[in-house]
Length: 633
Image 1 (cartoon, rainbow, N blue to C red):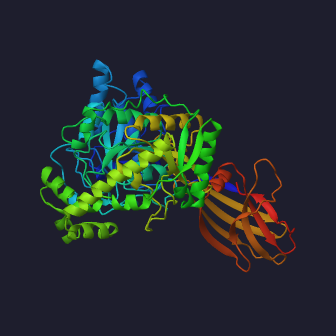
Image 2: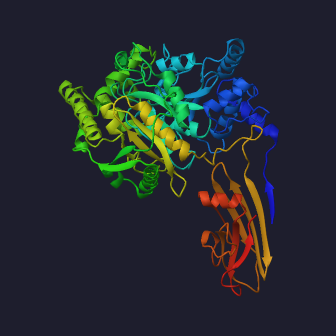
Image 3: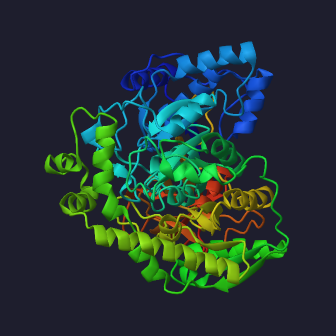
């Protein structure tokens, strides 16, 4: 048995990085990871800012490290396909911010921090596409307000992320770059519509990312990518310059790997904007303080209203993970009470506004920001400038005639829904409602995703926060949603912060690990030989961490003494060395002398390979009934 690592020549990898830089339209500027102990992998904004202040890294080096990860994992390796464009001036902007830091100090916690922005946020130095070929070259006449706020805080817009086209869906497929993949299982969707942001931030392609939510588009990608994401109270932050799906329902907010990062960005982007009438509430209401109030909540005495109907409809794997999280809250002194909202289904179905508002909103947006070639939805649909995944909703919107009475009725239903939710919160004296962010697991790409519980928050304007509840046995992230009264956003985040500090469920995707000297790990190849008791087995195994794939080829030598019935793999239990564990993978069966195949690894299988706990077992005539065993590596 021999092990070899199939490592390509460094020069070949460097050529690949140069090619990526060329394709994205940026000059190659030492994109490889800085030769130091500092590494951006999984680091929080505070940790990065500490390193910047101490001189252990510069913002230029941060950008280079993230670009190296983008090269390794977005268009290579697992090929997440999470990004549409890289900012060609990112390194230049980072250099300017480094110089400013030296002259006058940092502007704040976001100074010199690379962020990713969903490609429905206006940027005047990059096109804003909404994920559509119709707007592939559209450069709007003004930045989104939130983009301006991020830049003013010193953030670097590193890249723009893929989305479900026009934000009109929850699987994140677009006509401009196609399907984004989930880094926790690249066969599956990342959620949507902010799935590009979700996948990119889960994979540490930037420190934090921006999304938008009309009905679940921040919360579902957060749940599917082990992130935390807030659909804020309507009006806390401006949606000016974000391609609209429904201006009444739209909010724009960050997705992050931890509650602290989320709080930092929320503080930066929140506030009154004269260009967004919804933010006028902040003229009379105090602006939530996210970062300073992170530690304000107490789990002792906390009361959650458990929406049992949402749990009953959820997939059993999803339900089990969230039930365990709620049991933990009870152990900390919290209380879980079952509640229901009368006529919830009717209230939510009657109060949706996307169908009423999308066409007019998009047409007005294109006129306001001076789209030179495409002026309305009718042209987009008639020219076929969209992905088939949005054919239904776009075609329906194109032909729909606006009805004032129906629209007025839906607006009134939104008020009824909000009153019904607030009544349940008050009558049961609960701090928040709790339920699965989405009741189904991530579907395989190309399939339709169901299970969303997005409408309560989206149709009422009340805040909802998706937090990581844990993982299924197969390694898929599960999100738990907390929903509170209007402007309770900072309280919800503080509860999530306490949960995170004491019971962290953050786990980086195995498919996008830390880079070493700017390079991702190459596949590990194992040559296996077993020749014993008249049996001869020759096999080759390839362990590809980035694609989560285990491949094998196997050949049996002819023997006049033995008939081989089957060759299998088992995982040895770490504490007990008895090799009587069940079969996890069959390599070859009776009557065959050679075979090959691939296996998409479970978390347990992957850990067993890395810990050298995989064994090959051979069953055959004249061999012990328990089989002949030898370690794989």
